Image (cartoon, rainbow, N blue to C red; front, side):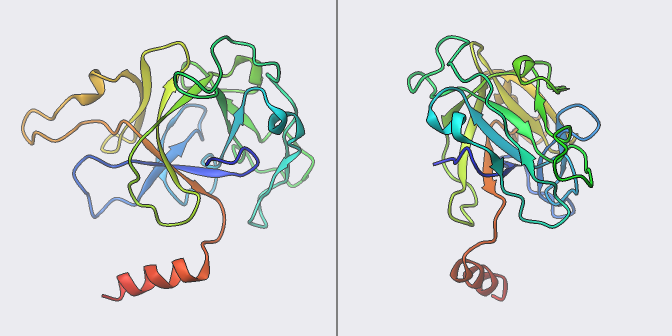
Length: 218
């Protein structure tokens, strides 16, 4: 279950051919528009799911930052009355906005301008009321490396388009689900990834980390 009070990375659910020369990719908005960048990029890749309505959205005060350079980012109440129509637990689940928590780095921990939102045209907006509303569609897990990871399709609310990625071009698009099934003309492989894996920004349990190290060690 995604926790609205936590920060996450949105990694690609990779169904395109594996490229050993490419570092794992995640959703990034540094530069002002959604794109892909390395999973460990220093800025533009840490996200909060701000669900519409419900007690949790009213009571949130701050998403914890686990690394020293990250400013504490207050999260104010917004879109709290369920406006927008159809944002409930049916037909795709509760709506949410996607807030990037580390778009910029400010030394003042009280600075809130480092938080921006993903807009309808996949560009960043500073006003949450102008942000795109999204809904999640459950998807089979990919990595499942740490507790709390979840795989989703992410659909634009009141739309038939989903958030997709092209790792070769490091690009992010809103596409119809049918268009996202496009195959490469020569390899027959998928051109686009049509889902994402939300990974909490927290240290994995020691037993999980030990298991990963054992696998890497052969």
